[in-house]
Length: 219
View: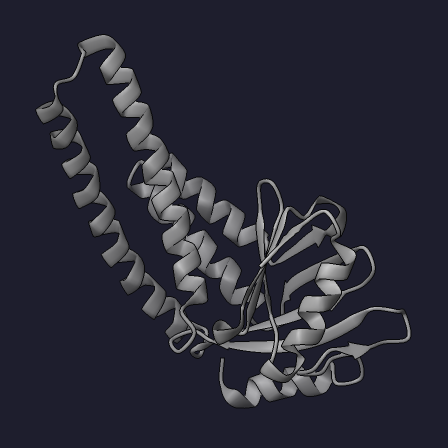
């Protein structure tokens, strides 16, 4: 997306949105944040985390299944582990390349609208970036279908249909601040929301989340 297009979108919603949290008449805070996708690696690190967990689960399952049936020796365990490490490294490289092209497609910035009230925080792609996200998701699904990879098809379908994420404060398990990345990670049992906020508003948003998520671990 070009800079002119981004400015037009922000101007269109200027009555309810700001780059700083603004309390609107409906009692909700709203703000916009543009994540510089190359300078801020938080989204890429999240992708790496998901890949690592996925490969780790499959690796452990293969070891347990094979160990029960074949009684692996130490050398067998290393051969399997080495294969998984090589495959993980390959996917990490491919992930970096794909992330670069996605960043270019987005105009090097990922624009997000945040909506926060007493019950939840919502992370929503701004109008104009939603279409790109859906297009990338559909391409991922098509690539997975062509390559016979149902997992990639599922991920692509999810990406094509999901342009927002809401986190209920009552189910938050942990709140982790990453000031250097302008990021506050809000974790539920099976999901992780990423709340980006400018430096000067970081303490306010972090404290607000802490106050409204009393059951969550902080820091």
